[in-house]
Image (tube, rainbow, N blue to C red):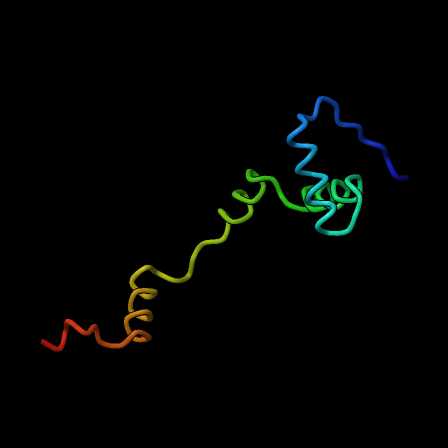
Length: 81
């Protein structure tokens, strides 16, 4: 069931920015905030993201990445001298 959220004490310049952004997208301020709240709720928190990504050990070493970049770039112009 949908819920209602009320935000109090928004500074005038912040509200003006929300009005401008909503107008640029052709929507109302509540619709803009609804979209942003949906996006925010769908994203993991920083702590959750760190927990998830910290559990994945990297299979590629820094040396492997640098070697591949060097091969992709080719010889450096200075190296021909």
